[in-house]
Length: 489
Image (cartoon, rainbow, N blue to C red; front, top):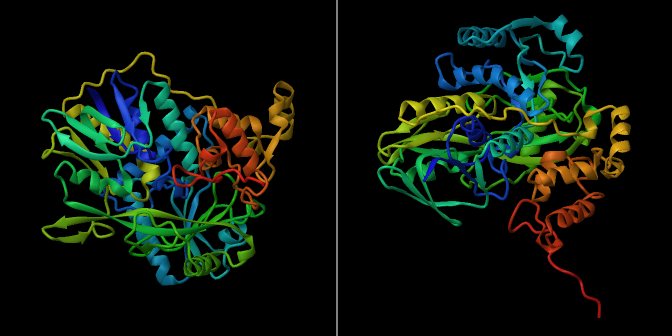
């Protein structure tokens, strides 16, 4: 019997797993995809929000503020690159300035520190590429950026080192409440657990319904985003936000942890939870919104398109549903008395990445309150060695690394300066797909989209995992890259 079983290995599930691994518990994480972070977390913009656009009395506001502090400590412990870059929410008119003042007042009530209004002269000096029609902005210096994929992988690796067991390609088919405890039926057998935490992202409503709790629905909201060439790294000095709309924070100009600016996302209601398509209409909408903020952005700067699905939750009342976002505008984190031992962690949309460490602490508190003994381990390993990324270090350090291991001088991905050794290390850490390598190392992320490095990466992955080339996939079963060998008569 497992003490705690977590469904979902996105940033929330991974954060909960790592936090629980501090205690003397048996913990398992089930993930339906080939690797962690392949769900909602893979398409996250990587922004660590300061809390400026959340209602002061909301759960998401409180957890965002707490998470903004926690993520800094966690980044240090797990060897991650967190960059505090600050955010600007801009105004083009006097009426918009009044809306900014309302946002500022609400955020200060929440407890967001060091907020200030900045004028046109400040903006000219600190954001020279910003639209000159912007007359003021709300400045929040505590905003930052992080790699969302590498955060998830670091949390999982650390949790694994502290005894958590991960089961990928393990889709949950049914949950039976055994009172006490649960039987979780999956494609890879049955798991028995005292407590179950539902962190299944887009599918959290379906998992919840398995235990008879079906008072909310998850509706996907598609966001199309566009990555710019790294040569535009200094396009802006801060995260640039427009005034938020009723359904989203708007189309942004985003600094990223890896240097490439990003523009987007759009906000489109869709039905299909697997719809990750991009469209010309989406590009046009995002491009127009980004150019309004930074007019010098050109479509020629775009090197990659992608689309991600965010969570738009709704509460079900009888046979009808009522929108929870934005009207209720809060996370669903609760112990389900209807199925004792089951905790829903659902509707975790923005700022879910920021709030994840605080959500994990809250879930631990709920578990303890509901009878799970939390005895701390004396041998908990809180630190993880920082992975080496050549694109992040000076040439002098690279030269020293090559002297110690020549594989650091074997550059596989020239666009992103990724060596064979980094690829091998990523595979040792758990990468089993081409996307797994990409998210960990940035190989294939440059302007050529892997045209030069894909075959070499496949060869390394094949050799390191003893897997035939025909079994190497982009992101799991059904995405094989090589279908078979060509025969010549």
